[in-house]
Structure formats: structure tokens, C-alpha cells
Image 1 (cartoon, rainbow, N blue to C red):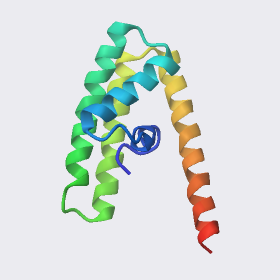
Image 2: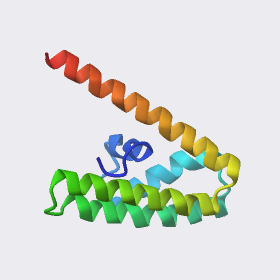
Image 3: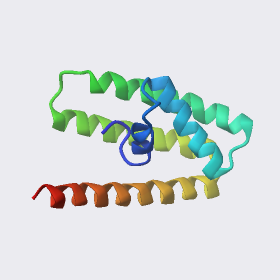
Image 4: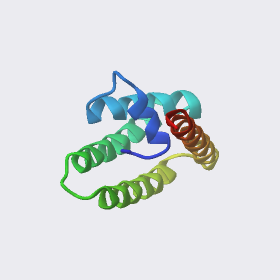
Amino acid sequence: MAFMCLPAFAQNQKSAKSPDDRAKAMTGWMKTNLKLTDDLAAKVLTINQKYASMNQDLQGGTQSKMEKMKAFKANEKSRDAELKGVLTSDQFSQYQAKKEEMKEKSKEKMKEKRNAAQ
């Protein structure tokens, strides 16, 4: 649930357990897929670390699932706004497209799990 969508990538990484590990995994994925320069990757890493930490705090919080979901979505929106400020328009468009693609794959997997459980 943390990070939603593209950030689901980081959740699926078995080796990426701490917020810093998740941020590094996410940044590595973005560096490869969006062809980030080292300088840009450093800026993206800072953003990813900020939101990975915020989302980690949310996961451990006492809020209801609905409150957490709203907070995760708000964090995702803020993170995207920050990323839009550092990525080129082409990179941000690619990021949005890949994020949507992963969201659809995640929905399909959840649907398959539900159908298998029936």
C-alpha cells in the first residue's frame, strides 16, 4: 500500500525493507527506465527518501486503513509534484505512463488472486 502504484515496485522488492532501501530501489529503477543522469538521480533519490520515510511512518501508525490510504495518496500526489519539478517533461511523461502500467498490472494480479480464492 505504501507509495501506491509505481511505488508498489519498491514494495515488491523483497530485499528493499527499510525506507532508504525502498528509496534506493525506486531511484535505481527510475534511473534505468527514465535514463536519469547521476546528478538528476541524486535529486530524485532525495525526494524518494523523503516520501519513503513518510510512508514508513504511516504504515506503523494507528490510523484506520481509509485514513492511511488517503495519506498515502496525498503523499504520492506531493511526490509526483516534486518529481515533476526535477524531471524533464519527457521523463515525467514516461514515469506517469510506467506508473499507470504498473497500476494496471497490480489490479490484474489482485483480480487473479480474488478469482483463485473463490
